[in-house]
Length: 216
Image (cartoon, rainbow, N blue to C red; front, side, top):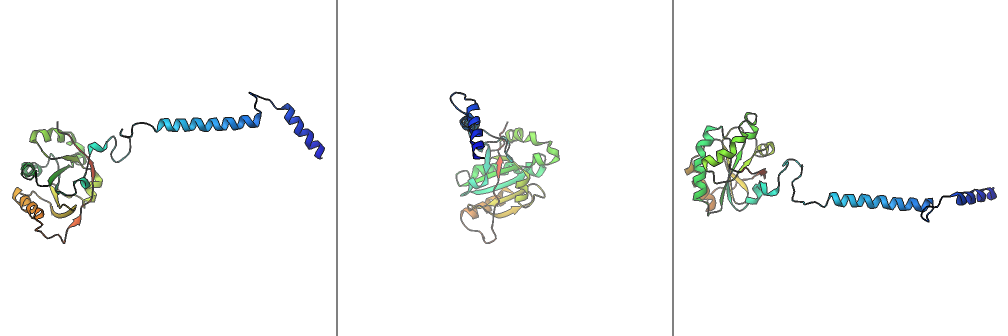
């Protein structure tokens, strides 16, 4: 039995095809190594591009970091966050006051952010109106495009204008669900700047990371 096995082994060796000085087993190992080398090269090639290029990753498809505004980046400033739309008459009425406040407090760590809900209302029919609207009214503070996450994060916006006043620690100290006068804003802003307000009911503002809209 052992003699037969030895004969089979000898026959296999003698009948084995030799290519490039390698037998079948050796060639198999070489092919395996080459396969993994090719896979590695393809992986490196596909992943060695410019990381700054935008990619199709939700929720900010085709957006780069320079196109986005994060509320957390404004920590250390008093921030007015105004949910509005171009079709909203009270919103339009209040915008000149916000522009004036931006000028008045520009050197006092105060920022205003307008969050346009045009793309989420009226079937998005007025979304394209935001950029030219900004130019017409000469809006001097950043405007971003709302998404549903921001709406829900701020407790669900039931009407516009809805405005939040946020202190330097990133906490909401006031919420207005109607048109607010410039005088009311000014009074509250000064109280926050002078640390002369009741902060016991302040709640942490939800962060957002929304695309900026450029004026046209």
